[in-house]
Image 1 (tube, helix red, strand yellow):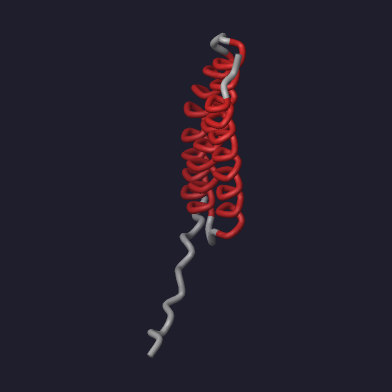
Image 2: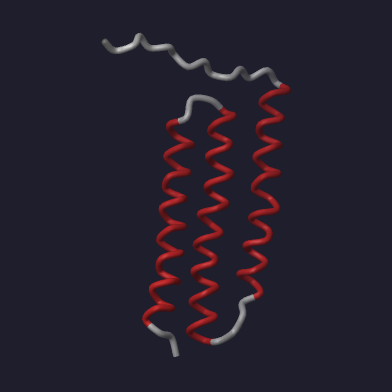
Length: 110
C-alpha cells in the first residue's frame, strides 16, 4: 500500500522531469546556434527523462513493491545515448563548417 509521502515523492520527480523537458524545449527554440541548441536538447532532456522515469520507478516500487527493470534500463539507455547523439550532431556541424553565432555587444546603460 502506498503512503501519501511516497505518492508526493513520485509526483515531485515526475513534475520536475516535465519542467526540465519544458526548459529543454525552450532552450532548443531560443538558443542561437546548433551547438547551444544541441546542448539544451541533450543535457536537460536527459535529466528530465531521468526524473520522470525515477518518479515512475518510485511509484511502482512503493505502490506494488516490485522493482521495474524496464525503467532502470530506460534510465541507463537514455544516459548512454543522449550524450553520444549530441556529440555526433555537434561534430557533424563542426565538420561541415557551421559557425558559432556571435553575440551582439550592447552599450552599457547609463
